[in-house]
Length: 121
Picture 1 (cartoon, rainbow, N blue to C red):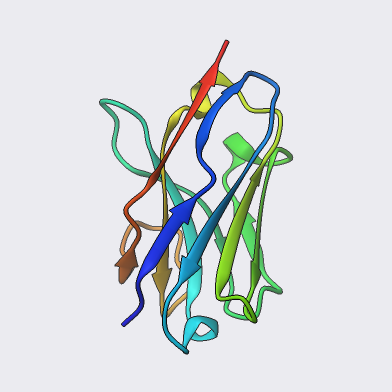
Picture 2 (tube, rainbow, N blue to C red):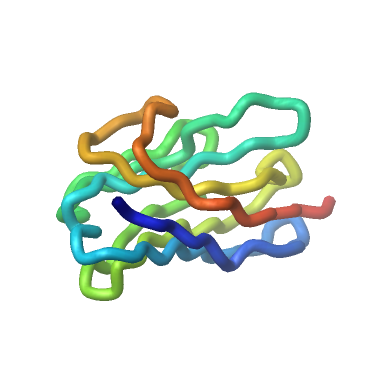
């Protein structure tokens, strides 16, 4: 089992940047693919990005491609989401999640509690 704690959210102006971090407990962090999701008010939770267990493979959705980058540091049990050129539409609660297999769906095994990102226009 793994516990996930996100941090790094906040209020930023459009065009600004934030880096989200997700710290994982346990000694098996490198066994999990890690994903980032977001949920805006009144909307369903949506997939944003995923990174493979080794970090050599990544994928981000088209709406954030070229602006968001997912990365991980297995020595620190941490996954990151670097968010640049933020837009008001990026406003949401962001969640990290862990899964034994690579996935772009919401069927992840473990979830964090979320961190709020608000982008003002």
